[in-house]
Amino acid sequence: MSETISAPENLGGSSEPTPERRLRGNLGVPAIVFMVVAAAAPLGVVGGVFPLGIASGNGAGFPATFIVSTVILLLFAVGFTALTPFVQEAGAFFSYIRQSLGFSIGIGFGFVALVSYVALEAGVYGLLGPAGVGVVTLFGGPDIPWWTLAAAAFVITTFLGYRNIQLSSRVLAVLLTAEIAIVGVLDLIIVARGGGDDGLSTGVVDPATVFSGSLGVGLLFAMLSYIGFEATAIFRDEAKDPERTIPRATYAALILIGAFYAVTSWALISAWGDTKAVAQATDSGGTFLSDIAQVYIRTAGNDIITVLYFTSLFACILAFHNVASRYVFALSRHSVLPAALSVPHPQHGSPHRASLWVSAVVAVSIALAVAFSLDPITQFYTWFAAATTVGFVVLLIATSVAVLVFFARDRRGHSQWRVRIAPALGLVGLGVTLVLILTNLDGLAGSSALGWGIVSLLVVALIVGVVVGNRVGDATKATAA
Image (tube, rainbow, N blue to C red; front, side, top):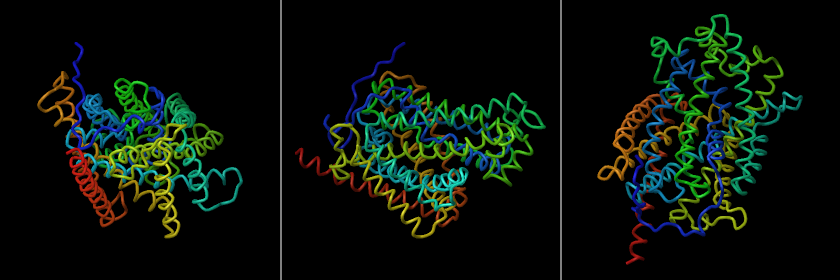
């Protein structure tokens, strides 16, 4: 039976943006999925997050955490996509929250989203720089400072962010296809050879192994790997048919990410064997992937992975730059940021001014990291990633609440499952995830004080956003009166 959808409502404190202040594009499901999966940086996660999850989490049971994470986020997506037809602007989380919980609260979480994604874009440069140095030295080049490679990638990202979204999507499609292909080949070879000396891993189907070690930490690292999947909604104005494209792209991205990570983590554990994989991830986490590649696809394959690891991080930066730029664009359309930032480029239809604004903030962040001699990985990236992780889960929780509130009195023709049961179950899962993150914040940020400082920064962003939203909303009402 088809569902009856009533007309969208405007519950915000300001009128919807005019057509000339909308972005233009013609993105289909595949293009948006490429954007989202590229933001997840598959090869970066495989080489960086997997060893941490295996070593600090639940060992050979780590692949199961991706199954759990995917289920939680799919439950979230059920309600998220149900609300999509009622949200007529490309603001993703903050637009969904604004539509249900009010203008000022929506703007508050919009500021949280902006801080989170700009922080992650800046932080990933801390991974990309050293990875780029590795590529240069691989081909016989000098051991140059990490920030020189970061600066080169920054220039290219700024250029692509200024142009039409189709150009970025093509670049991401090429890079993403290459990195998934090489990891897919590695997975197939490992499975075809029957894994290591102990054979293919059985930890994922053994409850004792799944619940061994620290399942909570394993789940935490798994959830980190999905950051940015909701970007399907941020490209609303540039999608061919938003009501169809956004839900399909959301489900496709989550399933693709979850399946890829679950299978690949299982294959990499199989390459060593259940017991040996944990020891290897603990003792040699930094070379966990390259050591496996050296054994199963030899030096040439390992060299390819070294290069694609660098391009994977670039793809991640580009994807998050596009997301952050569109958050700035969407917020500025409501006059909570300078209105000039919400004027699309006359030729490219891109948020060119918002893109340059984000680039400026990122440039300052990188410059400060260099000036204060921060370690690009253990300090610059880790601190910024911790801020994003907390902000991301908080945004998911707030959006889940927004869905439940919006459909509380009127299900708008949807089933109980879609707008009440599934979102509530997803909310419970996300609540547990947030508790796990906060209780492990010192490990993410490097110290307890710094971790809570990051939480305080997000709280300040929320409060400032609410205050600004209240003032803009009051001014709008006064003008209308």
